[in-house]
Amino acid sequence: MTTADDSYERMLQAFALTKNFLLQQVELGFDEVYTQGKSKKTTIKTPEVVSPQALVDFYHRINDCTKCHLAETRTKFVFGSGNPNADLMLIGEAPGREEDLQGKPFVGAAGRLLDKMLAAIHFKREEVFIANILKCRPPENRDPRPDEIETCKPYLFEQIRLIGPKIILALGRISGQTLLETKSALGQLRGKIHDWNGIKLMVTYHPAALLRYQQYKKPTWEDLQLLEKEYHKLVQ
Image (cartoon, rainbow, N blue to C red; front, top):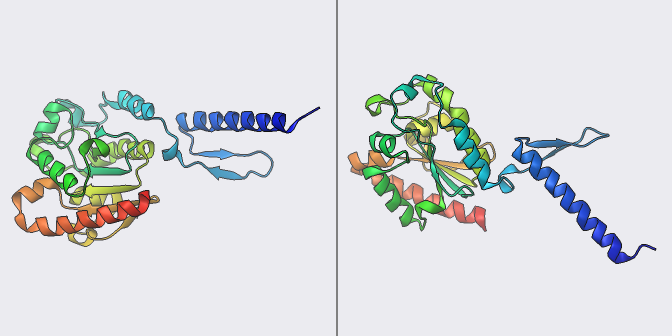
């Protein structure tokens, strides 16, 4: 005779099996599951279930990349760093000299300023994830070229998928234009909330630009305040 407790136990077991199956599909890279019978498609929100280990595994798959000529001149591959489950992700343009030497994004003077920018809106570096459009330093810190961006962009997009941030802050013109697929000036992109594949996105000035041009500090502070406000709406 089947009791209510037996039925409940079987239901829990079925739920656990289903959950494990979905997690396995996510780890294999599938974003969707198709059910039998009516070809009904169910979309999985992968950012909520992807294991942090998946980001580590991804790093090991790509850190020896030689798909473009920048591999010939780099010192270190700059994957990115921070919280693998971050709700806020910051994306710059490309590693500079110090980043290339240390293998970490945003170090040196620009990195110290970025830490202060984050602290001003009550974030610590280890709470967010920081990456760049390019993983290798362009010679003499020149701007990334279109072919380099196209080669490296899939790596960034996979990072975003694995981390699953609720909001992205693009630092600098090239980062904003690349993510939004536009040629609009930074001044036209900043100060508003954009959508990037269902993720909120904002654009502001790069910390290196703030070190050179004092007039950008006020609009950047306005952007950071808007970012903090929007962030708290999303995480509540």
